[in-house]
Image 1 (cartoon, rainbow, N blue to C red):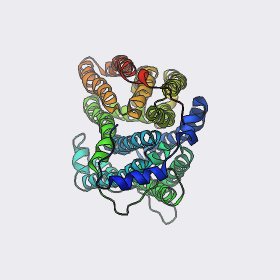
Image 2: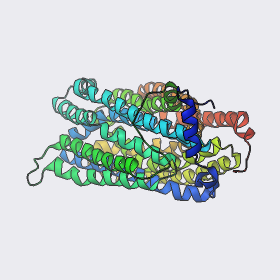
Image 3: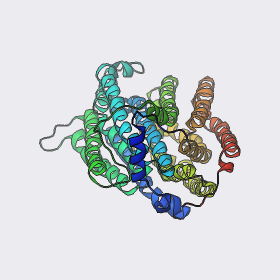
Image 4: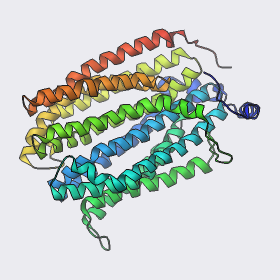
Length: 474
């Protein structure tokens, strides 16, 4: 890896010499890999589980307003997914660079990367705020002309976008802390934000005391209040407590090389997750031909499957700094050990999730609605799509490895093939046969996706990982 360009190179080198994070003193390079995973992943898994829970709670209370309200939130979901793609994608890029720089003992560069990350998060949030002001109604109108659904969808989406700075800063700070091996504080803050949202949801949706009943608008307000509260807490933690990373805006200047290094991982991750947003938009269009119930079921599936995949993503949040640090430290054995344990754990999670969706789909759907049409369509959809869970878990683990070592393009390639080249064409073709066939596009595409992931990992291992030295840390 080449050093960052700087006009003050001598000053930066001196700073690095006085701020070196000795790998011999960093648990990412010395502690048992299994112990690291068992201590670092559960906090992230719990915070992801809480995220899944408050998404479901949102939908539960919104469904109590009306089926139209639930449909409106489902139509707004692609833009919320897109915001999540930029939040998480940028955060993954920042965390990947920071963990590798710490492994290389380049602490000054790690600090500068974190500062750049916060600025980039604010710029992204501003872009979504502009969309929330001028574009939310036009977006919802693409999928429906029902006045009530249109009005509720516009209100919900515009509020989430205009005040999205909370989630952008929150996620960025969480990723910065996680890149150093600190998984507890991000978990605590994430849970606080989620609990605030869960508590405020019924108050703002149905009204209480001096708070008027605001329906879907209230759900959006509760969401952004929780995000902003979490942002304030984690900013205070990051800026005013001692960490391996130090944020300073004094004399800040953008460095092209830092931005390039962040987005070499972040951009493929953003695009990869944005494809999911694009997939949801097109699928909503395909499913709209079968009626409101069809795309409502699709939205419910995404909320329910988050209970399975959020913990898996949490596991891999713990995995990323371990892989990134030891890749920077050139320790092959710790990389392969971490991968082995992650594959075993994620396989177990995904298998349990698939069993729940196959054997109890009706019970899961009745959390939100008693509509016979939604239950009938949803039961078949959940049983079919859940067949992807186990192969998808393997793809997620390998994608995390690609991102941790700076090969974000591999993850992007996999996502492009699965979601654009396979799922959408297959779903469109199968829609000419019947709605029941549309759901089969997902497991068929996932089989090819996991095969490509394995091929790319074998390529990465042969070209780079197997040549790493299992170096003794001095």
